[in-house]
Image (cartoon, rainbow, N blue to C red; front, side):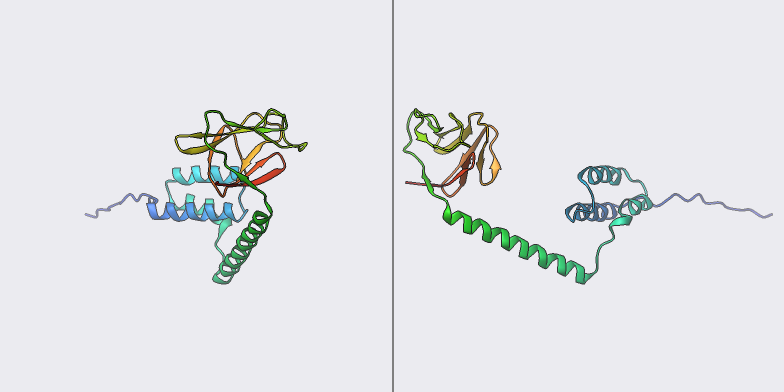
Length: 182
């Protein structure tokens, strides 16, 4: 009497470590510009839903990591690039005129081209009523008043209000200042 045993095998499941490695590789591919934002988002969704290691390999097949030499080269280029950005900011920062934070008062400091503003800026890129600076609870708050060319703090566009402090670079249109305490 012969008996045959058949064992049903199931495909290997994806481990958390495999999934994490795939997500890291996808993120590196996006950072290096090898994946568009939409492709990156779609592949992350597929990686999170993957049920087999083969599915993960398919998602990262075109993103094989570089060798040690390439990693060192990319790292060196990144460090040089970051240094040149910091150097450019430092060079520009020294050229910026200071904008002294006003004495706290009951009314906000209005900034713009209009002569009735507390700080009048006569530049074509500055709106009549551009922004206002207020002290609330010991913090300085800058608010854009719907200006045409925008208000920025440290090169980021202000939408609504933002807390500022001495040392921040504020821009009104194409005019920039470094905030300074009295």
